[in-house]
Each structure stands twice: as C-alpha cells, then as structure tokens.
Length: 328
Image 1 (cartoon, rainbow, N blue to C red):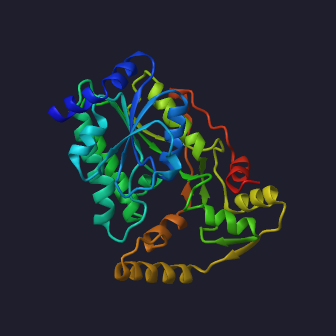
Image 2 (spheres, rainbow, N blue to C red):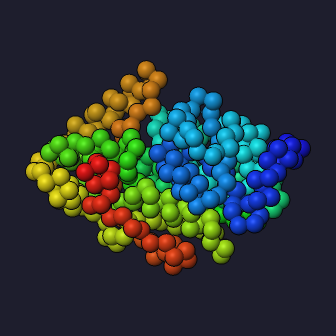
Image 3 (tube, rainbow, N blue to C red):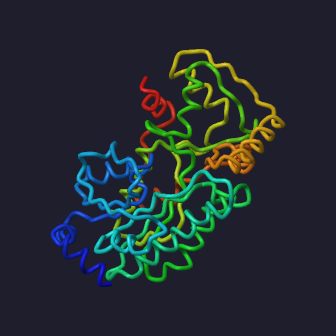
C-alpha cells in the first residue's frame, strides 16, 4: 500500500476533486479502438482519467488530451496498483483479440483480469470495476478467444468479493478507426461482399459511440449493477447477411455483388494462416477458431435488462453508423 499512498500524494488534488462531482477513472486499453472513444467520452463529461500504457504504445491519437498516463502492463502488478490507486472506477478495455494459442489469450484476457481485480480489491474504498467482455463469451467452445473471455468473466465473479462490478458483452463493435471490420465495410462499399458467415446467421451490431455511452451510464449509475449484460444497437432480432448488404446498398447508392466463399476454402485458408502465424510469429485474424465464430448462427443480443437498470438506449442504427464509419 506504500506505493498507493505515494502515488495518491502526487495526485492528491485530482483524487480530492473526484469526491465532489467528477469521478477519477482508471482505463486500460486507451490507445485501442474502443478505449480511445471511451477516453474521449469520459473526458468530455469532465471526469479525471488515468490510463495504463506500454512504453511502446502509440498515444498520438490522444495527444493533447488531459490524461494521466501510467506506464506499465497487465503483467505488472505494481503498475496496476499505481493505475487504480485512489480512483472511483476502473474500466478494463485492454485484451488480446488475435493469437495462436490458448495460453496467449489466457495470459492477456484471464490473467490480466485476475491481476487487475487484485489491485482494485486492495483499495479502500474499493472502486467499481467494469469489464469489457465480448458476446463471444456466450459460446466459449468456439475459439481460444471466446474461451478466454468466458474464463475472464468467471475469474471476475470468483475474485470480486465486495467489489462492485459489471461485465458488458458487446456484439460486433464498429466505427471510425476500427481495424477489424473496416476492411469488410470498404470492400462492400466498393461493390463486393464476401460472404463468410452462415446463410442462416443473424448478428447484432453496436456503434462504438453507443458502447462508450453505455460505459458512462454504468459509471455514473449509483445503483448496484453487479452482473453480465448484453448490448445491441436497438434492432432486437439483429441482422442477416442480406440485411447488411441491403443497408450498404442504401448508404452507398451502389450495387453490391454477394460472393459466397466456399466453406472448404475458408477452412483451408484459416488453417494455413494459423500455421504460418506460428512459424513467422505474427498474430493472425482468420483462424479455425475465428471461422467457427463467424459461422455461428446466433449472435443476437438482448438489451432489455441493461436498459431497464441504467436508462441507456442506443442512438446509432446500422445505416447511420455505416455513414459515419465510411465518412459518406
């Protein structure tokens, strides 16, 4: 605790101010796609923000913002203690979305949560803990990633004790700056849609700013929200692949040709990609596990419980979200 007292003394003004009307919030993953938007939303509401960063992270997009940076890593317990000392809430966005082994995902997504919960639990009073999980956690058998996200939720519930906590399971999150889905949207806006999902699949979507707003609602809500909640963009039954193509057509005013990629081809490419990643040491996106996620028929969420408890309602449906993402 000596480290915490030292750090708190250095930042006493910020901590004291947070007791009045603004919160002091610790954030992991601030330089990532979701974390960036969360940071901007929290600062825009006047909250104090302290963010964890590796010394190799690119902070250029957040340059000039009033962020108290703490250099460290999820593997470094001391840096996590400095991060959470004296804060009101902790938002955990960081994690691994690509990898080649279960151990890699577990090291980041499971062990990282365990260390962060330990650091938070040592604080007095104990801050609120908000975990950004994934809808993939609903189907942990599909991939290393999905399994690690479910296990992270288990670790959180097992270790929480008297710590107030909440885990959000967003579906596919998209928006400007997204590196995962933006290539798909761009290909479709150019007139080609590569169909890799199951023909009967339905999936929910969520615009990144709506997720940031949901996180804010959690942090300012004074009720006990302990639990796991799903989120979507306001379309209860989600979208089919044809729904998405129709929306792209409407947004771009272009024809979109649907190209069905044979499952055998997808399986071969994903297996080769995983093997190459193990040999050459890169983090692959398309793997057999990711393919099983893509082919799963039901990624539809239910907003009801979360909206009832927080008053949050999504504002950006897919059409408007794609206009903003593609800057049309």
